[in-house]
Image (cartoon, rainbow, N blue to C red; front, side):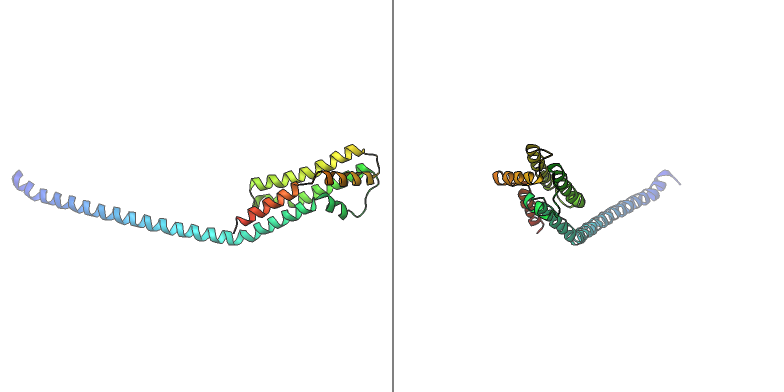
Length: 183
């Protein structure tokens, strides 16, 4: 057999094989791309369903957290807090410690709620807490630790009449705004 005959037999076979490889490769590539797109759509659908399910589960928990922080804010309002104290100690220093301890205890019961709200809102709540404690400390320092606790009560009443305790009101407003964004 000469080379021309051999080429005449091998060349069409190579061209046929090359064409078949090209067709199969294009087919596999298109099928692969189609499968990838289908999988991508299914993943997006799954993510969307999981997001909805997650919201369905976490929304009631988040709302409860906001409710608890609204309650916390109202409980650190000094006028109401003082009225809830059953046994008022006789000395200013003891009443100051009791009021601050009550605020800190209320806060400790609710500290985990921060995971359900924004950093900005949590900061507003912290500021409300610090404001209440600062007012108590400031008035107690003015009155003196060994004075009768009634003097601290009068001083707190005068102070809150003179300058409103706005921290808890601002925190409550921030909570309401954030909750409104959920709906």
